[in-house]
Amino acid sequence: MTYQETTDYLFNSAPLFQHVGGDAYKEGLGNTHLLDEHFGHPHRNFRTIHVGGTNGKGSCSHTLAAILQSAGYKVGLYTSPHLVDFRERIRINGEMVSEEYVIRFVEEHRAFFEPLHPSFFELATAMAFNYFAESRVDVAVIEVGLGGRLDCTNIITPDLSIITNISPDHTQFLGNTLAQIAGEKAGIIKEGIPVVIGETTEETRPVFVNKANETNSPIILSDELNLVKNSVSTNNGGRIYNTTLYKNLEGELGGLCQEKNTNTLLAATEELKKIGYRLTEENIRHGFAHVCQLTGLMGRWQKLHEHPTLICDTGHNTGGIAYIVEQLKAQAYDRLHIVMGMVNDKDVSGVLAMMPKEATYYFTRASVKRALDEEELQALAARFNLHGNTYPTVAEASQAALGNAKENDLIFVGGSSFIVADLLADWQKR
Image 1: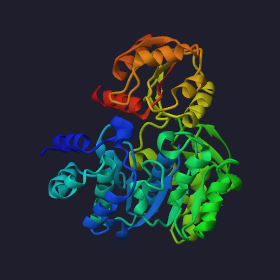
Image 2: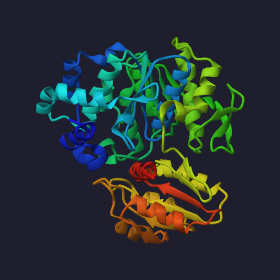
Image 3: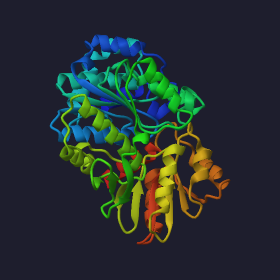
C-alpha cells in the first residue's frame, strides 16, 4: 500500500472520532490491553509523562516536549487530533513518524488487529508506543485522547501526571457536571505518582484531592502556587511572562490561555526536577521560546497573514472560546471578520453567546461528518445577533474574508480544530 492508501485504510476501517464522533468511542480498555500484549508492552521500555485535561493539554504537551528536547533527551510526543497529516500525532524530537513506518506497521500487523475491530485511536496509540520503543526514546509525553480513566493511553505508569483544567466537553461520555468530568480526568492519577493540577474550582478541587489521597499521590495545585503573576504580548506574536521563578520568560505561543498553561508547566518542571530530570533554566527558556520550531505545533493563536492580519486557533468549547474572545478584545483593528464553523456535538449555543456581535461572520463547515451545517449555524447565530453569509468550504470562507478585509482589519478563523485543519491544509496548497 502507499501512504495515502494506508491512512485511508486506517480512517475508514477503524472508527475515527475526528470524523464521526460518538460512534467511534469505545468504552473500556479491552482492545488496548490485547494490542499492548501483542506488541510486548512497549510503553514499559521508556519513561512517560501523562497530560490530560479539557483545554490546554496540547499546548502543555508540546511545550513540555520542547523543554525536554532542549535538555538533551530523546523525546517521543503523542498528541491528537492531527490537523493536516496523521503523522503529526507521533513525533520524536519534533520529527514526524515516517510514512514507511506507518505503512509497515499496518501491513505487518493488520492480520492480528482486524479481528479485534479496534477504534482508530486504539490503533494509533499502539503504533505510537511501538514506534517509541523501537526508536529507544528516553521519555515520551503522552496526551490523553478523551477523558482519562478509560482512555487507551491510560495503560502507562508515568513519572508525572498533569491535568490542565476542567470545562464542559464530551459531556455525553464524561458527565454533565464539572465534578463528574473531573472524576473521569482524575482516572490518570496513579498509585504513588505525583500529579500537577493546572486549574481547579470549588467543584473540581475535592475530586482531585480525594483521588490523590486514595492513590497516595503527591498533588501539586499549581493555581495555588501562582508562579505566573502576569504576561504581556510581544511584537512577534508571543508572550513574556512575569514569574516567580524566571524573570521575563518569553514564550512563542501567544494565546491568552497560555498564561494558565505556563503556570501549570512551571509547576510540572519543578516537580520533574525533584524526581531526577535534568532541566536547567536555559532548557526551560529555550523550550518555551521555540516550541513550534522544536515540535511542529500548529493552530494555537497562529498568525498566517498580515495586512490584513489573519489568525487561527483550535479553541472549540466554551472554556477555550472564552480566552479567544478576551484576546480578540485586546487586538487593535478597524473591522473584525470571523470565519467560523463548529461540530454538532459541542455546546454551540454556549459558544455563540460569547462571540463578538460587531464582527462580520463567514459561516462554514469543516470536511468531517461531525461538522454542523453552515446554514444551520447561521440560523443559530442569528438568535445571538451574529450575522454573515454562508460558505460550503473553509477555503472559500477564508478567501472571502481576505477579499473583503482592508489592510488594518483582523480576520479570525476558528470554532473547531477541524476548521483550522482545513484552513492549514488549504494554506499549505497555496
